[in-house]
Length: 451
Ligand code: GAP
Image (cartoon, rainbow, N blue to C red):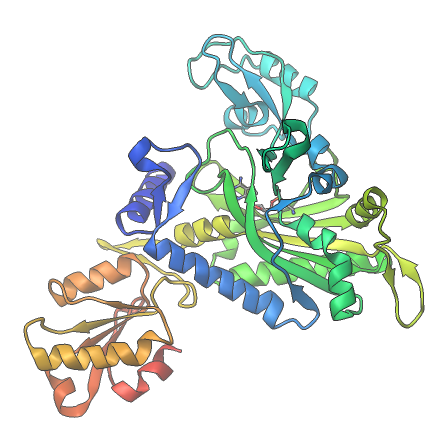
């Protein structure tokens, strides 16, 4: 059932222009995907909604748009060049590589492997004689750590001097620019710096559609606080994160918080909890993370750069490194979760019950018939009235039933039809995606109705 659901979502995504396989005309490139016309609009809607919720509506949170390529020293100071790696094993028969933790997780459902040392992973694989997922052989090399950062080179200087990395998380942009934000905005603690942007990881295992990809977008906040009240802020952010995703309609019964064990904590964190979603592939998996990063990052950057990154409290004159609570939201996983959670099949009808703020189109406008100029012109007037306010679809193909079917499948909340009666009294029918009820309303009331 679960596999079928994913097959349906992948197929609908491709057929209707949400997500296409990356580089498909060249045979594809694993773990890369293109967001099509509807996907690009939906991604934009999620970004805008997140920015509105956490930056525009929160005066103590400042937006940022830092660069993807930063000095390689950033990644040395942050610990990513040494600590940001996956344990890989290679099959000696077919020479394909795979992540040791995923091999174990895919075969032994109850074993938690995150953060275990490579020797322990080797032991579990050997004890359970876990075979190669590609050729079935059981002949592995020992697990070896493999760095996830993508390397690149700048200019034409010798390789060792030109080495740079594509950022592995947006978070470092916030730490590296901490002082500039403090000097330009003069914020008082607690305050946050937020950004939305691409991050890159050299992931080499099964991606499960857009769940795990080489490039993806993060929506992250570094929330700077005093150390003594970190637990209060942690709990507040837990609530804000939960409310944000459930307010978008994702079923709370399919979400849960899970705290990282000591073994699986990232190298920078002393407490992390993930919001997990019950995905159709393999059950509960990480959707978002909430980490208490202490003062690890600012301290390290201060030490390695030689620049004093301490915060000067304007009232007490104390100088100290603020501590950090980091709520991190994956944009692509949000997109995937919303699609899966919204997918409904009901008596042969397929529809996406997407929140109207997120659906690619807020409404669709139909002229009842195609060959009647007055109706088409009136429908164009209606389209022009709404198109600058909301993404709006236009459809004059086939019959009305087919058009409803087509808009339901992409989650359009409202369909407005201009018919003969419109020409007489300036009213239209407006049909609700979820109830399938139609109402007659005045053209002047459309915007109010769909707001
Ligand atoms: N700054 C903290 C950080 O980067 P993370 O748990 O490694 O933490 C944050 O990543 C979020 O980014 C995850 O919760 C997930 O939503 C998303 N994410 C991580 N790796 C991803 C990948 N390869 N593909 C898609 N999304 C990913």
